[in-house]
Length: 131
Image (cartoon, rainbow, N blue to C red; front, side):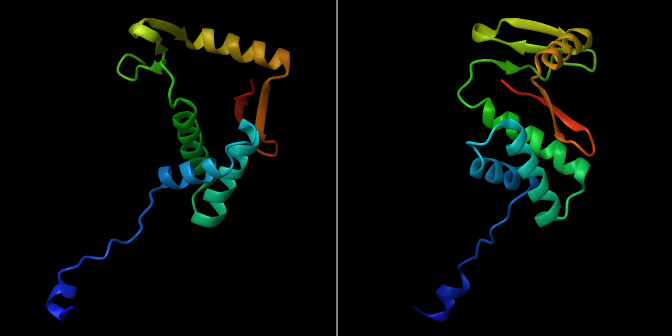
């Protein structure tokens, strides 16, 4: 091959943003329970990619939710959701409304059932609901 042809080839550098890094790490831990998968992902982002812990938490949570929602008919309607209400769209687009009070009641019931688990016990956050 001549040198002119080689100069026309652009090398594609592997680039991964934080979300893709989290997805890849969670995929590696896909058989772990929610708490362990998130804890491992947060640690990976902080230690191996120099993220702040708060940013790593948020990225890991969002990535976990994305993976978990794959092939689900229900989704959160981000256009209808506000700081006061989360709108879940079930099959057929039916809206289900969760106010902050509704979600606090779900959290309290999960605590009572022992299903509300802290990922990082030292920092006492984030809290996830185990199934």
